[in-house]
Length: 136
Length: 136
DNA sequence: ATCGAGTTTGATAACGATTATCAGTAGGCG
DNA sequence: CGCCTACTGATAATCGTTATCAAACTCGAT
Image (tube, rainbow over all chains, first blue to last red; front, side):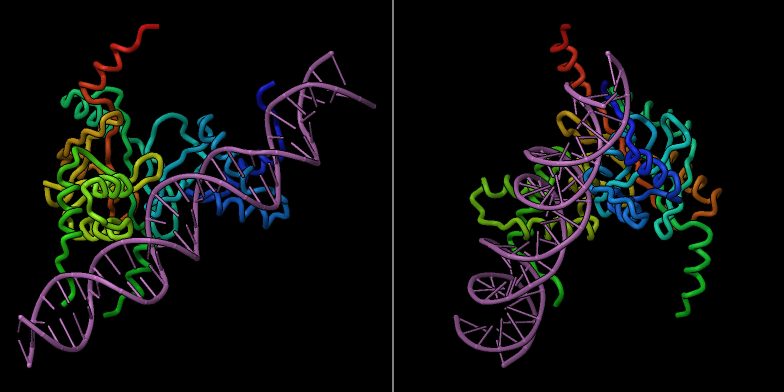
């Protein structure tokens, strides 16, 4: 017996699915405690690590150094377009870039290339919001 | 008077230039202490942050969550090809990807897009070395 | 060359995120 | 139902980074 099903793991999975974009383990833990689950921080970390390892979640690092997680719809390799204001995340296909990465790596003698391609920007809504409050 | 020239800052800049690839602040600090400079850890962090802010250094996050810095030859925006074994770093042009990133961001309504594009792999030398020690 | 104002330094404490520890709990199979 | 063992959760420990603050130093002015 190697893996057990616990309600905690299930709650973490749910909370992750409910989240709009990427969320940190801390945020997720806080959110779960609001649901009156006495879930522990360490458990959330463990569950997230497990989900990420199993391919059910995707993880990346925020510019501030936190690990962010997100339930992954698209299985396999893909990239993200993330609003740095509201956290909205869009999964993007990047076959073009995949190719380019492999080609570039190979041309420099590199093998086993993995790449990190993420785009941070402002989504339409946040761009509009920002335009409104600018008046100088 | 806003910025002063101190030998510490200069030493950090030198040490950074000497490094082959990306180095962490901690590593750089250790290396500088070996040179018998009584330089402080906090100072190294400050100097690196300053260099990065001024565009004289480039920073990225290692998968382990450390901030890595590197003296930047190419001023302006560019990307990196990094050997995850020996740390060798190659600066790469990626106009193709720049375009793609802008296009992708725009097509989803995103503005002010910045992207992170870094490729981690094994350089030729390390690939060969690894092939040698494999015998199972 | 000397002085003074204000920036920078450096040792340490504080901080935040993550991981390890370990006794107690509870899932799942007989 | 009961046992075995993986899992949980509170806490401590760890690690990288930032803040603090008195002392040192830089630089322009005298």
